[in-house]
Length: 226
Length: 241
Image (cartoon, rainbow over all chains, first blue to last red; front, side, top):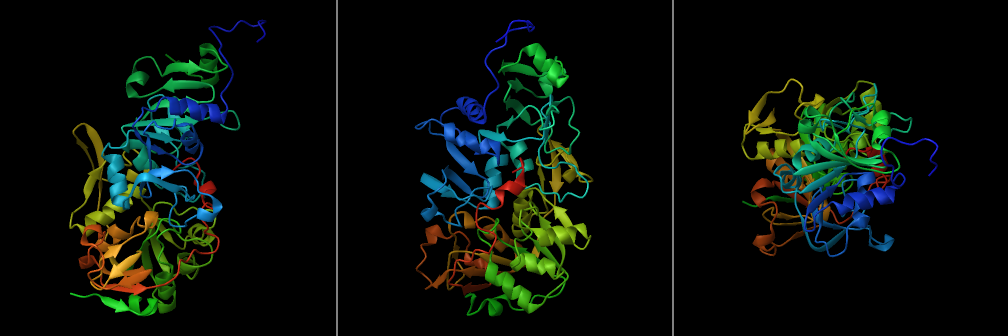
């Protein structure tokens, strides 16, 4: 790394690839946890859960003990995940109906939910179901139930939109999915703790950065970070 | 009391009045009672309120019912899919009413109706546009939204196996909304892969007790609609689940 501009604070490494980010999220999941992985980027986390960790995956369309994608010959249209993608069942799997599946979620029995996001606020508000574009057909699925139901909801996302806008914001401008429900953001350039208490007490807390300094991160986001 | 064991989907469906509320099981293609929906197309009822997680795929079944403008209103959680063009067109033309309900609330509202409850308070949706205008209450420090029960006139579900008294078992993730919908309608019709002699389903494994089921019909096929092969819809979902 060139030293012509000295950044305010240490800069370590470089931004994480999607696979590295998924591995970083996976590293924080306690062995033995029940986990729901949202559609999109979060599904990659499944590839990085260590074998033998005893982590059980929940898919809200009604399966605990979800396994990886099947071989083409073993695809069963009646065995799919919440993204309607074919999956497999592992030894010890169980099936249940929709009311049970969401009772399991809201009742605090799922330890961790990893969600994608359009925006997250420093207070942990989540916007991930609607782009707010006029004329768009709205759809919510299980997003709102998942956001508030799990014991711990974390977000996995790129920190900026494709056109460079921060997704971690002071206040969400898109329609909310849940209020104060997110506790941590895992992104390509930083892991940041969020939530109502942190927001009230000096701002979201930076846990780690990848390829940016703390100061650069504040500048990038236009936020004061703890 | 024995249930009616019908020999065709049309006979099983029977009369559905115009203006009925019809629940249709399924999550995407899994558990969708395709032959019963096609019987409903044939039967001709209109001005329907449909309760279903999705709003139809491709050209057939629920999508066709919408295309023919037979659905006045749909209550669902995820109408937007890559192949839901008939719903999209009807919605954009203002020719179908949409009540968008978070998936867990949808299931629990159906369950509440079947269980004789007057509704429930849930944290899901609090502070979001989908809770606007609804009663709220703080319970043990957690803000909650009141959700009302959601009953129906007819439920169309797909199970794996039935016996002569209407006990049902399901298969894998095709179970989804079937068990709750079966409880919440005045009349429940189940299409199954096979109807077996009463006594041959282990009572310990019954998922839907026959008390909830009025009619069963064996449809010996695994219908997956064209354009709804599993895996084709994920891209439409964005980051939301």
